[in-house]
Image 1 (cartoon, rainbow, N blue to C red):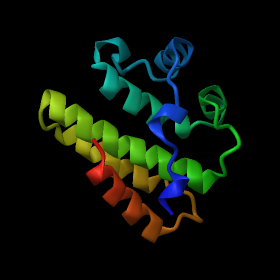
Image 2 (cartoon, one colour):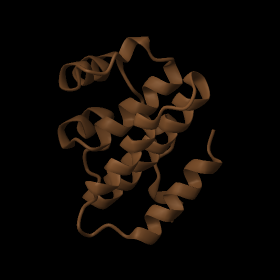
Image 3 (cartoon, one colour):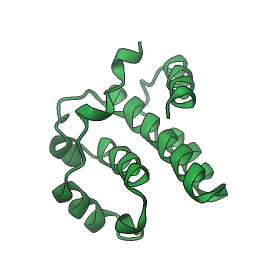
Image 4 (tube, one colour):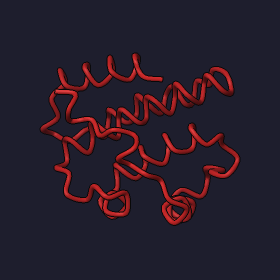
Amino acid sequence: MMDMLIAEDQLPVSDALLTRLAEKVPAVHWRELDEDVRQAYARHVALLDGELRRELGVGDLVEPVAFYNAYYWALLFAKRYQARYGFDAGIEQETFKVLERAPADVDWQVIERVNQSAQQAR
């Protein structure tokens, strides 16, 4: 199952992608985040957007798999952000909001396993 999750080194975040993300999500101060925090958030946002998925090199992902990966990176972003900057209820809330946007055909057992994988990740 967790072979659905794409390895970090298979999702390179380029400067061009960061520039596109800054245009699409201007409220986020991308350049102020530590590198590992920024990359996790960039992967999360890009995986939710079909056009940005292509830039990330995974444009052919089916929607549920893209969502599982986006959720995984949202969880890793929250984990890394809070490890670096401290607890933030808004960040925590955002991870729950991701689930509200789940595709209709999402498998909630897979979501639980994604959650467990994120807890074990660094």
